[in-house]
Amino acid sequence: MAGALRKMLGVEQQLRAERDLRLIEDYRAGRQAAFDELVQAYESTVHRILAQLNVGSTDVEDLAQEVFLRIYRNLHRFRGQSSFYTWLYRITINVFFDHNKKRKRADVRLQRLQNAMVDVSNVHADPDDPFRVTFEQLTRDTFSRAIATLPEPFRDVVAMREVDDLSYEEIALQTGISIGTVRSRLSRARARLKELLRPELAAA
Image 1: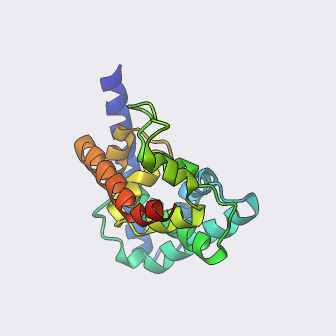
Image 2: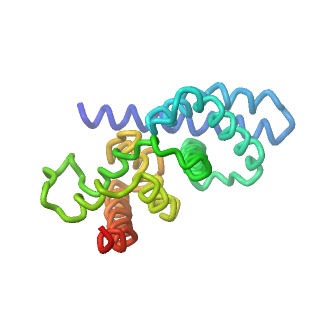
Image 3: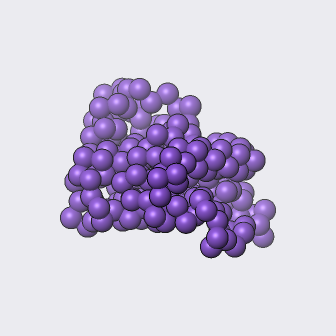
């Protein structure tokens, strides 16, 4: 059953990637409608990601438009080294962080990203963990800035795991890396976040 599911997911990902590349090539060749088809294919996906980041309903549409505007402006730079979905996901996360930084919204909730410090799927959280206590005391602004400083590959897997609630296997399929690499990047990202936030621990 698991093997069949993996195969089915792999086939779906491959078909989607091939469709995306075809549309991008058509757009570059001058067929403007191809970009509209990309927007239609991913509009609901961008809305879902933003909603899971707890972006207010009044801001989702504006941020989604900003995502596709950035894609439109930078599509000539897409080289296919990762899937278009992964590239779009990264842009969406960047738009979210830019929005959060500019607006300094105190009500933006990053609790799911904070959970990146403890992989609840594998171990029970230790309430006495000094890092966990500190993260709970940190302002969301501080934590958001720390996440934003991570290199994109690490930020991507943290967001996919903790925000989009993807399994290791799904992240591997989306990014084209192995499950072992997914686990390694998550571990390194969490370690980096702890190091970045260590001064906050001392000040707490």
